Amino acid sequence: MKFSKAILRVLSGCICVIILSALPVAGQNRDKGPWWPHPIWGPEDQAGASNWITPEKILEAISLVRTGTVYELGHVYERGMPLLGERSFAMFLASGSASGNNELLFNDEYLCAEIGQVGTQLDGLGHVGKQMRMEDGSEVDVFYNGVTLDEMQSRYGLRQLGIEKMKPYITRGILIDVAGYKGVEILPNDYEVTLSDVRGVLARQGLTEGGIKPGDALFFHYGWWRLWADSERFNANWPHRPGIGQEVAEWLIDRKVSMVGSDAATDDPSAAVHHELTLKNGIPNLEFMNLARLAADGVYEFMFVFTPLRLKGATGSPGRPLAIR
Figure 1: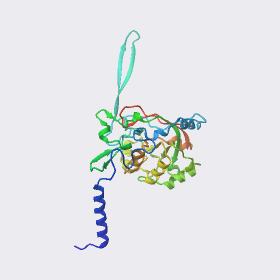
Figure 2: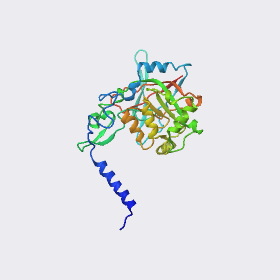
Figure 3: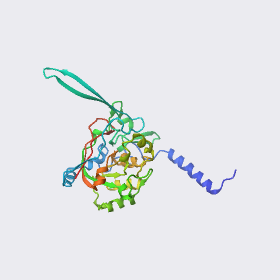
Figure 4: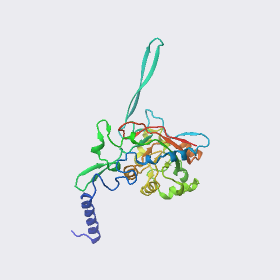
């Protein structure tokens, strides 16, 4: 069998890639790797980009409030909402009988859910990791700041990088209305938001790249909130959701944002952007937001408030994100 020189070059290149991917990386170990320890917050950090929320940043955010108008940026948690994969959400009512001299009655609820990963959710730093080959040849599952799965995992939650380690968010929020910029109600499936798109959106909204400051939270409006009421349609389209690409992720990292979010998931379906933002740089991702009113009212800059629940050892958190203008 004869092979052309071009085919032989391709085959030899593929073999080299396979061999190199199997080799341990020199100097890569638990104490030092390609993204750890964090260059600013050090090897012990578990709060990630929420560290950008300083008293000065909070005061800056408060100065944006002019009318006191509150925008709900999250969906209601309820039966029938879209759930990815085998995730679950079930709430049952429990009532107590009248008792005591005052015939006291009460209602309680029993909630069974993957509470940090359903509905409007903040992906914490213990949510996404990556298998790495160390200099000694071992395969290790690594998360933010070099924390390994063996160090963090327990039957009752994460021993490290639990959502309780993240700080409350009171900061400047910026809406990136990509759907509005493109003149559509909803971005088409598999659409990758480019840096050219982001720059075009900012110009349309009267904002500049230079005006984005460390600690800002940026939220991408794709129009996907329109699918939320139809779980079957939402889940069917999920593998083809729109999202930002690697170029935009690097742009966000360079600007030291404290959080990203969208009305779907910010990253592309390959999850490569998830790795760049959360795993390597500690930037959490607020998924499944409702950005309808902000976009309709043309509110592009606002005080943003979100406080992750202090669920010890959880991988993420539900919550009630708010924009206040």
